[in-house]
Image (cartoon, rainbow, N blue to C red; front, side, top):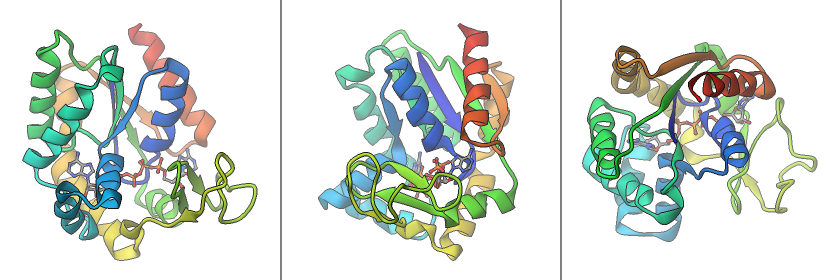
Length: 216
Ligand code: AP5
């Protein structure tokens, strides 16, 4: 089963993808996370991606598609995956169809999570991430037990470099221009379910599970 989580920066895609991944036993494939790993490892891909990420722009399709296709071709994705942050352009959506068709698979469900601009900025501004295991916290809504320390592995929590006020706004602008058209693209194909991202984490997850139950 291949499930796509679509929505603006900060709406909670990563948080929900992680919960769903644990429950379904499917890998959580986050294009943003793959880029951050490449940046941390200092690879050529990471150096190229960083220029775009720092400015809040999308990394070019060619580079992104090759990276995600390689990840989806790994054995743990044989039975499906939860895709978070990919596809983000019509070109990426078409490429995903091709990659999946090569293995007689297709996108089963696209969950569109939405929320107000005020909520997105509030969530991005309060996000802290573990440097070690990438667990995500929020200073108000999902705080760690001990400030600055990950509950799961004890790792150091940090704020993402692309979560500065200026870059947050740019990312939302880029989302509206380049990614929002995917909502109509998938709606026309009958794959889209829209859920309210404004609820608390269990409330959003309940809607996600209900959408999944309907297609199963
Ligand atoms: P990426 O890492 O994908 O960032 P994003 O899409 O901007 O999404 P975020 O990770 O910021 O937010 P999220 O929706 O996952 O929210 P989260 O669960 O963390 O991409 C980063 C960059 O990489 C891009 O800008 C681009 O440059 C590049 N890139 C990535 N993919 C690309 C692609 N396909 N093509 C080209 N370039 C690409 O939650 C946010 C906060 O809210 C957290 O603190 C969380 O604890 C809290 N929270 C979550 N849910 C709730 C809730 N229901 N109630 C209260 N708080 C909540």
